[in-house]
Length: 391
Image (tube, rainbow, N blue to C red; front, side, top):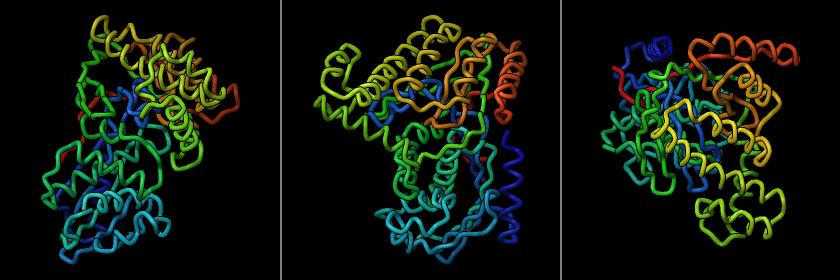
């Protein structure tokens, strides 16, 4: 899916510099199959990289400056590498938001290193939908991180590149997200999910078997935009930290399903429901991997459904459009469906028989029209490889 983005990034860099790129790198967005808001609680997640990618075309400079431009905003943003420490995090608001992602990655990579590194021009294009919950931000971060790591000769492994992306998002952008998105973007493999322990960053590649089972992952983008740097996400994270403190554990990862009755006695209803979502979602991730290994992908539908109900009722991060998409897809024959991503908008996914994708898509489109909602953007995604150099 990234051929158009590659051409756009190359063209944009040529328009900026008058030269062909020294190299082209790309990184994918991701779909989180299951495991939402568990990552920053030291829990388990199970995403896969998708075949929609962000492309970075890079041109070399010799003046120690970094200049970024994108198809989102063709006005270049330029700063001396030595000045990045002055910008982030305290003066980040002086930088237009989209540019904080690549500049923040450069800042994170250079932390503690010689800022006299050779400068770069970066042109960015993407076919990862923005605001759909498919982690367009991590795709920008990891494409940028891969490019700069190569060109600057930093020699970092993929886990370190993921950490740089997360730091950029947390501190340069100001979004209090976990590390799942960045890890999925760098570790993705074709036809596989990444079973990630967010405490020690151990990752297992788990075959999904969707193709062999004639299944497709249908993304139902509600077109209700969300933003992680706004209040709802931070409030949920604070509630999780509060719940862990009440229970006397380092993180909600350390709470078992059997501990929930005691937890309910100790905290207010809202905090308890936030805790219950994370604890049960962790268990659903573990169960999904177990079921995939033992029974195959057609047996995970009930776990996807239960995950959505928990996000809707306990974590309260769904919106009516997401609920309608999920309910309609199920009624039209999907094996299972759930919202994906941070919530408050974005996309839902449905696991659907290949021959029924058209039928389910038509049902969802009709339901949105009947409800008076804007038409959703519906498309399928394939589990794909992670960040890489393309040219």
